[in-house]
Length: 78
Ligand SMILES: [Zn+2]
Image 1 (spheres, rainbow, N blue to C red):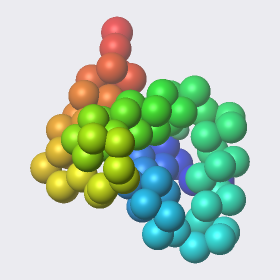
Image 2 (cartoon, rainbow, N blue to C red):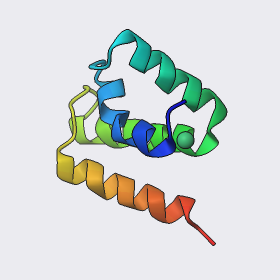
Image 3 (cartoon, rainbow, N blue to C red):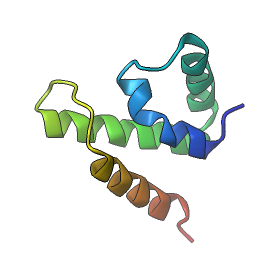
Image 4 (cartoon, helix red, strand yellow):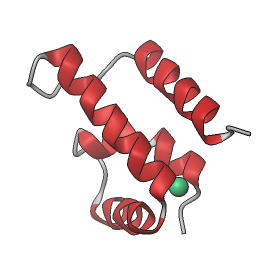
């Protein structure tokens, strides 16, 4: 089973369809059981859509890092 960290790290590749078949299956499995990662992926997708104005474009590493940081702040909420 993938960890949350792995899922988040592979988030953009997943949306960009760069992952292999089994990786994709693993991601889907994790997203099915993990609300946090589901929320992160949704946020990631929205951010990408916003940045690229409707067309899928991979965000820069900087943008991904910022999103990850935001997500981690949220998920480690006291
Ligand atoms: Zn997770």
